[in-house]
Structure formats: C-alpha cells, structure tokens
Image (tube, rainbow, N blue to C red; front, side, top):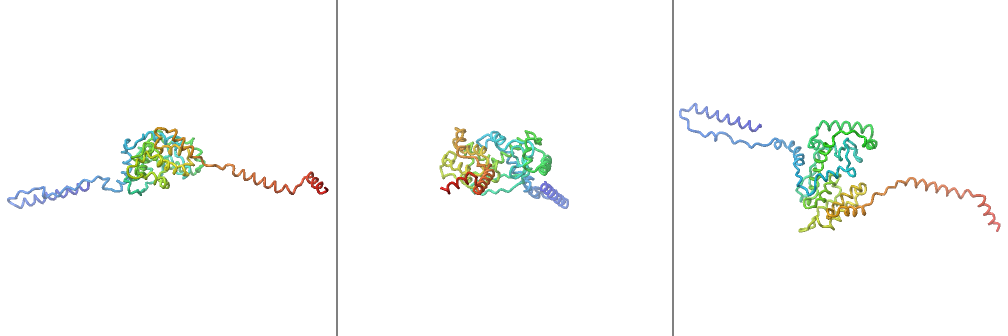
Length: 344
C-alpha cells in the first residue's frame, strides 16, 4: 500500500510539471505522458514484505493445506490409533506429562511448547521440519487463544497444589476444559505435523508402504524432536540400499530396522505401543497384521521389575542374624550329645 501511494504521488507531480510547461509555451508539442510517469513497482503481499509475519504463517498454512492424498494411509485411522487409551489416551482436561510434568490435553497435545528451529541435517532430503508453537497450532485448530491462557493458568494452580504425582492420579476425575470436537481438531493438526516431520526424517518416505508411513508418523507424534536420539534407526531408514533397490519390500532390511527399535528403552517401557508401531514396519503387515504383531511381541519382553528386592534383602539379613547367633546358643540336648561323645 505504501509503494502504491508513492507511485501515485510521483505520477501526479509529473503531470503537474507537464501542464505548467504547456502554459508557458504558445505551441506545445505533443508529449507522451507514459514517458514521464515512472514504472509502477511490483505489488508485494504483506506477509512477504514482513519476513517475521511470513515465518509465523507459513508453517501453520502448510499444515492447513495438507492434502489427504499425500500419504498412503488414512489420516482418520492414524487419529484413531493416537486417540486409543492404549497409546496417548484421551483427556479433555489439562494433565501433566508423566516425565516432564508439562501440560497436555486431548491425545497428548502439548499446551506450552514454543516455536522451535529444527534445521534439516540431511542434504539429500528436501523436506523441512515444521515446528510451530503450541499457541499457533491451537489457533490453527480454530480455538480461541484466550482459552489457552486460561487453561494454562488453571493448570499451574492445580500443579502447585497437587504436584505431579497427585495430579496424575486425578486425571480420570478432571473436568473437561475443551469439547470432544475441539480435541479432535487439535489431534488432526498435530497428526499432520507429525506426518510432515516424518517426511523430513525419512528421505524415502514417499516410497514406503502405508503402514510403514503410519508407523513413522506415530513415532514422530509420540517422541517429537527426541526421535533424533535414535540415530541408528534413522540411518537405517534412510539407507536405500543402492540404485534399483525397492526399500519398502526389502524384508531383511526392515528386520534390522525393527531390531534397532526393539532394543531401545522406549520399546521396553511402552511395550504395548511399541509392538503395534514396530509391527507396522514389516513389509508384509498389510497381509498379516496379527502375525506381524505376534512376531514382535515374542521378541520384545517387558522390563524386569524388582518389586521384592527390598523384601528379599530384609529376609537375607534376618536369616544371616539367626545363623550368626545360633552357634552361641547350644541346646541342652546338643550339650548332652557333646558330653556323651567326649565320654566315649
């Protein structure tokens, strides 16, 4: 708008100069007005003219414009898996993350994440990571930002009173702070973000099968930027095996990929979720989903819990004390036996 006003002002001044010159001359020569008016500058959108505003809008716009045909699986199916209580759960009130204590809602939607820079380390992958803030995703889902501030203030008050452990015990009784439809909108935009970042993690994402794409998207949704700690796993999924290799159908390759996750601490701590995700990496999952899950479950054992370790230690200590004291307390029968022996 500023450039257009500047252009019109220059044009008016040029025309005024031309009319003034014409009044001083008795026989003015014909003049082409277009030669006196400077060329009009290109009209630049405000979002492009303001780099900061463009940077804020572009990641969210990328998520809102996501086409369902961009992936080989159903976005609704992915949302159903993430909504399942065996996975992230479905809570309509703000509750604390079991590890960090930060506020979550719905299917594990983070309420207070800032916008983050996440550079692409793979020069062979043209896709960039999308890391908008929680507030941007909240607005992209169509929710009022004032409600987000109110929910966060109420969460901080509850956390100060209950602390994290007691707060988590109250999750089933928390009053709803968003509707089921609003939680679904948050889940949808978060799932799309996970898909876009899964494509940024895996340069061969478009060549994978539908279940493989869904599995990788679930991993990104559950771990976020922490997936970068799985360096060996990421190296394997980006190894195309050379020219002419069909990576999605290479069974031996994907067995190696699966084992890299099976050996992780994440798989042992979240066994039910891990079995479902790791099984989807099997190229034959679409034909035999149950067999693929049983195959992973047979290998992935739950973590060993030493709940009775303290009890056993107490028993061992008590037993040691009894045995250590017993030699000093000889019964009368033992003493008699000992005396009879000496007599013989």
